[in-house]
Structures are given as structure tokens and as C-alpha cells.
Image 1 (tube, rainbow, N blue to C red):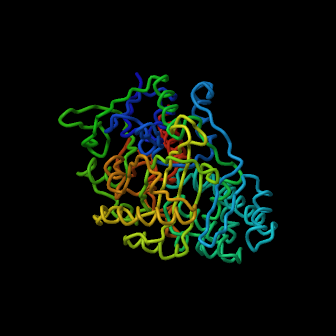
Image 2: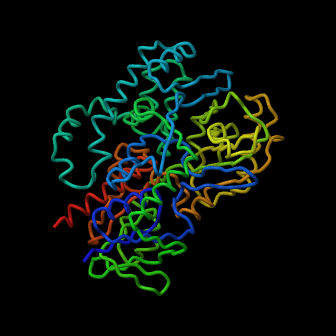
Image 3: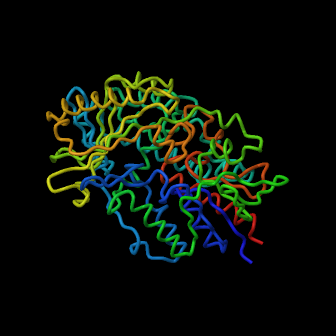
Length: 492
């Protein structure tokens, strides 16, 4: 008889885990509190515009494709994407504009024309970024960081030999400042700290490996938008006969004598051999495991940043904007400090604009664009968000109008707003944090919750709040790690 697995939550990690375990011959049931799958990767339809919610950048598509490969399915029947020649457009207050090309040599050559830097210096940075990634990927990302077997390996020995080259004893900002003289270029590479919701002034220098993910593997746009990632994996899971239960909020993980027995939904007990929580680790313990001793040191780790996002239907086209655009503020150090001290955002915020209508014509009426306008903000700790939203909206509009030389406010046809309160409510992410705990600590990777419980048998965890971290690639890898742990445990 097949062993039964219950997965709590259908975020991208939950879907990946469900697919893998179903292929391992488990009977998989997914219970989702919302009426739809996807967690943070959802979509909004409003007045003829379609907006992607959640991540706005797609990297490392091989982790999505792998799920179709192991399922013996042709990925093209479910999912397709296009590689971008341009990664991002950068706009600075002094009028500087820079286009980051996907090709490393072209990036370096263009940077040399815009910034005070030699092409060889930029290429050297990318080379170091690659070496850091290659040295640590199998240790920190692809395996459980909390199993002794992970550290008894050639990869670990190799990482220890090269530990001085990993810059774990300094910050990302110091690494970038040492490498480049031009503050604009330093700021450009500092912003990669936001990929895991951290501050470049606190996160370790090893995070300078993140640019490698863009420059080496590339950036991509999924056809039909980011939500197509969710839809394709959900359809694959259905085709594999994974069973989904929506509008089914789990109230408790049932544990007897330190062994998982199932879940409770209201007063209904549902038995299971194993349980995997794709819910944020904090509410998992605070609400679903109330009677169990919680790992307080882990749960009290500082959280990553959250986001304030304006979804604007724009009655105009902007040829200079192409999919992913960054508008830098001049006082970004103060901004990061404010975010992690839980203060109000500055009045000159860093803005992230993702325009997808240039890729999918159906996402906006003809001659119009669907804008994803995001600024980094603190997590929800009962701030006056209504006031913050009102003030930030005006600051964002002034900044965009000034740099683009257009009255952007007059071009807004429709609007939807996503703030930390709503993120927390919709996704159960504690404080509305986007990536679980922050990486503003040298040992942050080791302080993330493991993908299994040390005290409760048959209980596992996946998603952005546990190892290896947040973002689409890492969430997909968390599902892989969980499935491999379970396969090893039950292979006989």
C-alpha cells in the first residue's frame, strides 16, 4: 500500500515537492487555504489589464524543466519561456542610464562607457562570482545543510580550502566598494542583496555570487507571464494524479509521541504517514504545532524585507522601459537602514518597475502597459501602512515623472496595491517578509530551519522560509531536498 503524504500549502515549493513525491510512488494530497495554487506567484485581472503577483524575475529555468523531465513529460506541452538579451535597465538621479546586457563581454564594454571602470575589472568580478557559486552550490543549495553527510564530502573540503576567497567575513557592500571606484556601479551590484531581502551593508560578501545567476544562466520571461510557472506545475501535478484540496485551511499538525499522525481541519482529523509544511516556518510552529516546543532561536531571526507594490494600468507606452527596470535613489544606505530598523521608508525610494505588456500584448489594452512598481519596505509590525502607502505613492510618482519626463499620475487607468499586511494575510508569510529570515548575518544560512524536524518523526518543511532560502530557484530546490530526504528514509 502506498504511503500517504500531506503537503500544507501549494506555493511553488509545495507544488515541486508534490510532483517529486508522487513520482516516488507516494499518495500525495495538497491542502491549500486559498481557492487557488501558487502562494506568492499569482495574478490579478482588472479592467482589461493582467498583472503578475510575486517574483518579477525568472532565472535558472532548468529547475522547472527538471520536474517535467523526471515526470517523463514534454515541458513544451506545459511551459515555455524566452531568454532576454537585456537583463535590466538602470536609471540614476544624475541622469545616467545603463542597460545591463546578458552577454558578459557586452555588459563589461557598455559599463566601461558609462562608469569609471575597465571592462577587464567587470569581467574579473563575474569570474569571482562564478567561482564562489561553483564552490558552494552543492554544499549550501542542493543538499540539506543540517545533515552530517553533507559535510563529509569532497565539496566541503574544497569549500574549506577556498574559504578565504568566499568573503564571508566582510559585507557585500565592502566587496563591491573594493572592486569598483564608481559609486553608481557599486550601487548596481549592491542591489543584489535584495534578491534575498537583505541589506548590502550587512549581508556577507559571499552574496556577490548572485550576479552569476543572471550573467551565466541568464534571465527569462515565461510566455504568458510569471503565473504560467504556477499554472504549468499545477497542471503537471494534476496529470500525475496529485490530489488538491482548496479552501482547506489546516488548523493543526497532529503529533503523538513525537510522530506525525496527520492534520486537523476544523474538527476533521485527516490521517497521514508524512506531513510536509510549505507554510512559513513561524506560523507553522505558532499555529499548527502549538503544543510542540518551538525552536525559538530560529523563529526569532530577523526577517527579510517585505514589499509595497503598485499595479498600475498605464494609458501610454514607454519605449525606454523594457521588462525589468531599476530606478535608484541617492540615499539608499539610509533606505536599507530604515527597512531593517522597521522604520518608514525614505521619501526617495528605490523603485522596481517590471513592465510585461511589451512581452504579452494581451496583458494590457493596445497602446497601454501593465506596470509592476515595487519598493522595498519593512515587514509588518503594525506600522501606519495607510499613511505610508499614501506618502510612498506620491514619492514614487514624483520620482518616475521627473526621470521619465511624463506626468505618470495622469496616465494611471487602474490600480491595485499589495502591501505587507496583505502579503501576510494572503500567503501566511510572517510579517509579510518575502524570503523568510534575512541573510544579514555571516551564519544566516546555518540559522535557517532545516527541511526536516529533528524531534518529530515524518515531519518535513519546504519553501522560502527554510533551507536553502527564498526565490523561485531556491524554493524549487527545497522541494528537491525534501523529496530526497524522504526517498532516502523510505527507500526500503
